[in-house]
Length: 293
Ligand code: 3HC
Image (cartoon, rainbow, N blue to C red):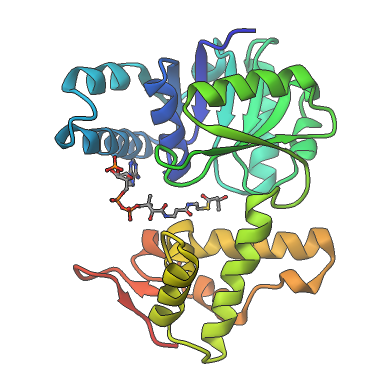
């Protein structure tokens, strides 16, 4: 089966990144969101990120125009998916929203189309079960920022066919990504490690072991991480981290995954990280300023 047309649901942080790499690889892309302002913001981000390569001579104006020309922003779900060979969903991590969307998409997309979710934790099997094509349903987990990060985790649900895995492996490779195949389990491979690691850094700050900036510096220089864990927490979004931690506790029934009280308080205060202008750092000035707890 050859994939030519891809529908990306959601023009947010992950959705616009996925649309970007798909269009760059030559696929015809429909990027769908529920309001024009989200589409405009997503397209502006793609343009800005594509232009990063201009000064360095890694891309040309013509290539950028051609890539942008392959992305069609749409509001109507039917228009987005009716001719798609592959639908990649990157909408908010709300179980009911995902289930309702997939039920609708299943009725609108062509029967041959593969359905892929970019969820960071929700069960692929549960989403597949609301469609009439669970063998064509799969997890395709990208990492932020999508154009830079080289991994796609491919997640096989209970009913996913081997052929679906192979098609998604080929598409991911064409996007310039390496893949790992993961059997469904909460958090798959990467978030199972990442989320407890970031939580431990937050526990350490909460207990006064080190300041925010020292904890970040320790891990950045001591473990060669590109960003310290608290900077990364702000980058991923504190609401996302809390959601995944709570989901882990529900699914594994193991308190070792519990979220630190400080994380929960920050989310309740609306300090969600970089996107909210405040998290473990304050982003209102020229340079991020570490918070004191
Ligand atoms: N889009 C496109 N390109 C981007 C970009 C973006 N949003 N952000 C950075 N880049 C490019 C730059 O243009 C530059 O390109 P070049 O190598 O061709 O010159 C390159 O990436 C490096 O960028 P910078 O020099 O500006 O900055 P850094 O060296 O500090 O790198 C970073 C930035 C790539 C974000 C790096 O800090 C990093 O890798 N951080 C960790 C990111 C990470 O761990 N992501 C995973 C999060 S977990 C997740 O997504 C899963 C979810 O389910 C929770």
